[in-house]
Image 1 (cartoon, one colour):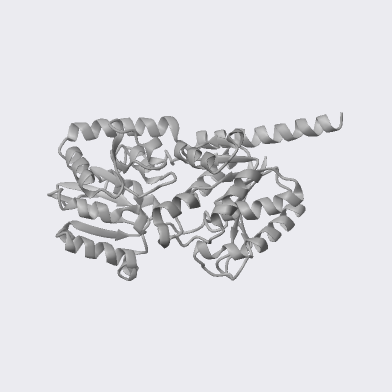
Image 2 (tube, one colour; image 1 turned 90 degrees about the vertical axis):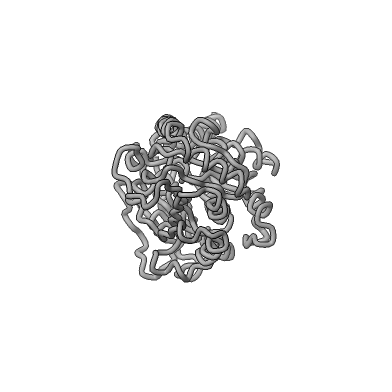
Length: 404
C-alpha cells in the first residue's frame, strides 16, 4: 500500500523538546516506520522550515520525507501556519496527481484542512488524527490559547468530511461526539511506545539523592510542571529532575524554565530541583529507569507518550486523571491518578509511593506488562492499516456496484 501522511508542523526529522516538537513527531515517525516494516510505502509530507533542507529525504527503507514549500522556509510557531495551508494543499494536489497514493492520513487539524482539499481533487480517501482538539485547548487555556479563531469551525468541518477519524483515547471520542462527529466514522487507536528502546532492563543514571522524581516534558505551562515543583516541598529527601526544553546551554533564556526556577526558589526546594534541558532520545530510557516515580500531571493531555515510556521501563507513574492518561495509566495497577492543578494531592501520591518500595516494584511490573500487551508499535500499525484497508475495500465495492 502507498500511504501519504501529512504532518504540516511535526516532522519526523525534528529535534524533540521544543515548544512545538513532541509527541506528534514521535507518533508520525514511529507509525511510518512500522508500516514500512510491514511492507508498505510511506511518504510523510511536512512543511519546509529551512531553505537548506532537500526536497526529499530517505528517512528509512520505504519511508520518504517530502518537504513542502508553503510560506517562508523558516521556523514558525505552529499557530501561525494556518494562512499557508491553502498553498500547502495546492502543493499536495500537484504531488498526488503525479504520484497517486492509496490513502491519505492527516495528523493535526491544519494537516486535515490541507489534506482534504488536495484529496478531493484526486478522489482519495482521508483518515484524520487530530492529536489535540481546539475546543479542549480553549477550555483549559482560555485567553492564553493562541490558536487561530477558525480552528474550532475547521475541526468540525474535518470531522464531517474525513472518511475516518482516529481518536487516540476514549476521552477524545466523547469530545468528538459532542461536536457532532458521526460515530460510524470514529475508530480508536492509541499512540504507541518503542518496546525495543524502552525496557525495564538496561542502564540507569546514577541518582544524587535517596529518591528521584522525573518529569520529562516540553516546557510549557499546561504540562503542570510547576505543580510538581510545588508538591516537592512536601516530599522531603527527594530530588526532582526536569528534562526537556532547549539544550542546557540555552535553558537560562527559556521563559518557562525561568518561571519554574523562580517557583522552586519560592517554595524553598531550588537545591533539590535539577534542570536537565533537552535529552537525546537514546538517553531517555536510562533517565526514566533512574526514577523511583515519573510524574506526568498536565492540565489536559490528548494522549501523552511519556507515561507509556515510563511504564515500558517498569517505572510507576503519577499522572493527572485527564485525557489519554486515564486510558494508559490504570489507577492502583500501573500508577496513581491525581486531579490536575492540585499540588497537595500530588504530594500525597508521591509520598505514598516513595515510602513503599514493594508497591513501586509491583506497579512497575504491571506497567511494563501493560505496555508490552497493548501499546507496541507493531500492533498500533496493524490496527491503523486495518482502517485503511476497510476504506479501500468499501470504495472498491462501491465502484463495482456502480458499474454493474
